[in-house]
Image (cartoon, rainbow, N blue to C red; front, side, top):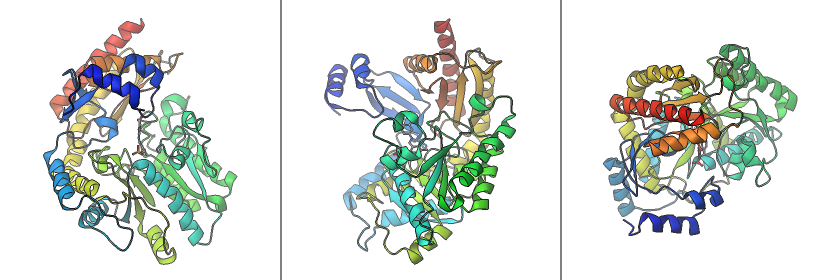
Length: 453
Ligand code: PXG
């Protein structure tokens, strides 16, 4: 579509384009890989190389690339009504229909949705909403939000503050006040001699200790990703979420599930909250809502919270130009219809997840792999120095980066988070494509092992 050579694109890229989460000095030497097209689970670069995209873009292209139905819906909507807002007693059919559809798929007690342009904006909305809720209940001191170290909730000021990433807090004077953190349920790294189930209860109990330390009258909510994604696909022990739920219930703290990655089928259920059988008061959504075709996010709100906001709140002074954007809503509707009508979520649950799980588990026989964990189609491999003692490499992250680069050069997109290799492939992936994915992973692990010898 654009008449440039790869070289020209790379030159212009390094001259003008500031990338997200990127060291530009390094990138100027290494140069960007230019991705030009995609279909199904595959990407192609400007030199014609093909890659199996085991990350579904950035954990988002749930239906896979190249779906005509979404292109058609977007095309039609742009022609009919490319933009209008819902601020001043107006609305439009796509935003209304998407609200209905999303609420019909969500847990039964979540029947209202506020739309945003991204997952970060969704979590910013959560911060304001939970604090507004408690002030309406006559408890304005309940404004502290408890999150977890190594959580990822986005990159805006409030969302990055909710997140527990030290490297993000270190830049730009974060976190904002009234956010606190407890440990993460990362058994492989932190579990020591405990069984995973014991460890799950122990870290969940940190929530109770934190609530008591801060004073229950000061705590508004707890927020967590059902499975942490960007933190390294941390799949909590089975005891973790039931204990968190019961602590939130006991102290009447709002439970916020950040479903930006887990939502829309990633775990084989519609939401991570369905998978773990938790009952969140609010749910942040984005990514799989539109399979990333057009940016859109949102917050699903429980009947109880919505009733207070609506009955007592008057105007909620919050909203975005692009809240409920008609084109994004049209893309999301087409996307959700594909997920539902093609039974993709059920197919993950009953067919592809069990199929990949068995093969994934077998990867633990590889010398580098200390643990292989997977739920639905979100999984991780821990690359370690010594698997008998769960000892990580000394220069943490170096082997992961090497493996990631080998993967790219071998036609596989698999992300490294320190030395944890993670996958989150499109939900449309077939058994044959899973075979191909696993074979590529084995080949890349072998090469990584060879190079570090
Ligand atoms: N919550 C979660 C759980 C996320 O994973 C966000 C919120 C923010 O969404 P937006 O749409 O504002 O990006 C995310 C985003 C990574 C990576 O390196 C992950 C995300 C974003 C960028 C990089 O894995 N997740």
